[in-house]
Amino acid sequence: MNEQNDGAAGPASSAATRRRVAPVRVPIRHRVPPRRWTSAPAILLGVFLLLNIAGGLLLVLPFAAADGHSAGFQVSFFTAISAATVTGLTQVDTQTFWSPFGQVVLFVLMLVGGLEFMTAATVLVFFGRRTTVLEEEVYRDTVGSGQTSNVAKVARNIVLAFMAGYLIGAALIFYQMRTMPGMSLAEAAWQSIFLSVSAFNNAGLSILPNAASGNNLDTLGAYPYLAGLITPMIILGALGWPLMVDMRRNWRPELNRRRLSGLFLFNFSRFTLDTKLVIILTLSLYALSAGAFLFAEWDGVLAHHSLLGKVGSSIFHGASGRTAGFAALDWSGVRDFTLLIYGGLMFIGGSTASVAGGIKVNTLAVLLAAARSAAFRHPRTEIFRREIGETLVARALMIALIAVAYLGVVTPILTYTEPHLNFEKLIFEAVSAFGTNGMSTGVSADLSLAGSIIFMITMLAGRIGPLTLVMLLAPREEASYRYPQEPVRIG
Image (cartoon, rainbow, N blue to C red; front, side, top):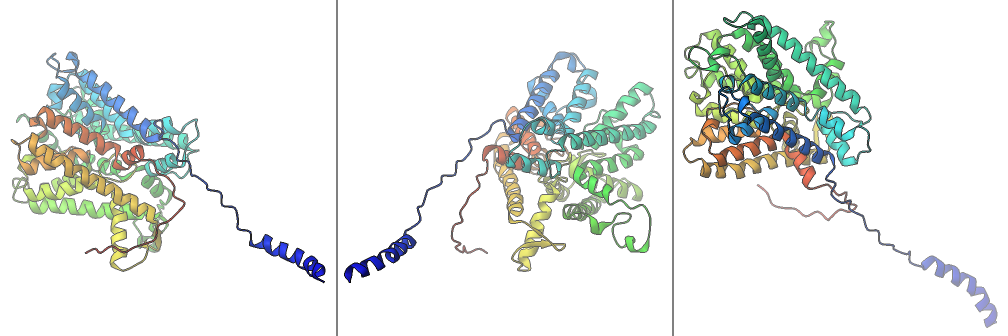
């Protein structure tokens, strides 16, 4: 009886035991890949630094200066970095100080520097080898393309588009240059191509002949045609390649009532969210910059201009003061209100994948969209019936915080190394260097060696970009876990 019960219970007991056996837990260690110093940010940084070093060494040569004497390492490397980062800050008069050889070096530096991240460096990184997920994110954020397989085509299109812009702009500028007194056709052609590249790349460098007053600014201000032509070139260069592609894709030249409710000849409803945000915010910032300049300087530096001259100068400086750095008047005489407003505009800069610097309009747009959603108590960042991911919002916040932190560290150091300079103008110039803008109040020429080195580093940091620096120094590790949430008191 017992044997039968044992025999009957045996199989059932074994089955129950098998069911109750705890699963074997095998710990899986996520291997963190070592830091790759041959990654995209590292190569971009290395190539760009070599470009700046080569430019500085060429400018330090005696025959790079007009008087045949070496400019010295401080002036040479400051100017080379300013040209390669398409900033435009100078410590000497570009037109009179540098020889034709030196001007050619500056031309090459700002030409290559303007195309830097979008073409040559992109091809160098991605063409012909496998890419990591992180590098693909860098590529998408920089170039605006979702795939790295078509990098050669994208780079080719960017080069062709920019070259076409340079040539068309030079031809239009040449129409004015050939009429300038005492200028040969060869010199007019050289001036035209130099100014065209400088304007389209938002470099702000000019080798226009000085006016009778000895001021290059008066030359540009004396020719409204040039200022009116440079303005749209600056805007185009600051818009960014992805936005241009999207606008071209949605170009509809035919007019009808339904489309007029959109954005002129474009089908605004079919734009990507990125394009919509950039267009709206860019137009708002241009209106703010021009309006603020007209309001603040009506009886200031614009006091001796006619009504049309005041409006035209405000529009020109509203565009140039944000990203380019061209000036048709002396900015050392503007009011503190103007310096404050334009300091913020230079900090924002242009659009992503453009030649302009700053934290980028796209970054500000994401932060404003997140703030709007938070104000309306939306659980997610939503705008134009689209949602912006949390990762993108965090990245935008990181870029802004790094930029603010950098300037917060540099500013006190500059006040210590440059006690002889005006505080407001010094800070304005530092923001101009970080935003690779180049708008100057004349402070750069009076910098000490320590101040010049700080400004060189600032121009490099502003051009490379906070996001690229973070990716270079701290590669991201994908976490397969989440910590419990706990509230923190704010406000």
